[in-house]
Image (cartoon, rainbow, N blue to C red; front, side, top):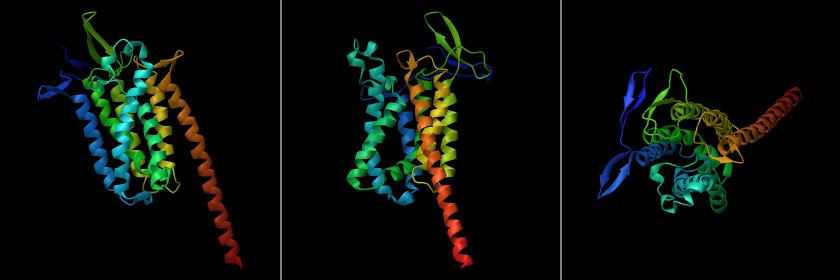
Length: 278
């Protein structure tokens, strides 16, 4: 297997997708990296105990249910839009370690899980979303390096400074492509930093969740336009369309909430002035 190269950076990596074998079973870097991202996020999340009026134990109960459901839904989403391949390779459907999960499938699955969980626990859905929102992009930022190890989720041909060389066996030479895994990892890292700081002074319920959906939607719409492995429906890139729609939809909601909050503050200010004059 030829190494992955970054000629302008003077870097090359020759990483086997299999990290090691345990009792005859291959353990893949893809899964290790995703689990590592989840564990790091959990470490940060635990420090927010009692934030948004929620106990860490309650949030942990939700995550124990939502994480596996989210991963399953992410895989289902991917398989559905790649059914032309999987209908003839049914035995490959469960082999998630080979790559092939779609984050929007995971987000949709986690949101549905959160709705039922919050109804059962009688807690605020938006408060739970706010508690979790800053840490989802952290998991994504780390998890994208699993795509790097698997040599997948890269973009089209480019001659940019950050071009990445992938060896193509069928043509017997390197092709130089956009390292979209790297772009998205950086974007998600920046979203995490923004939301982690923002969580300290957020005063609108649902604001952190709305910001995540807006910022990730904008970033994903850009990244998806560069990728060569997008999932399609009627000649449209499904994740790109969803990204744009979510960014617009939650942008409108956040704007509405900001206006409502401003009007509330203005009204309170006027009320205080009247009381002072009296």
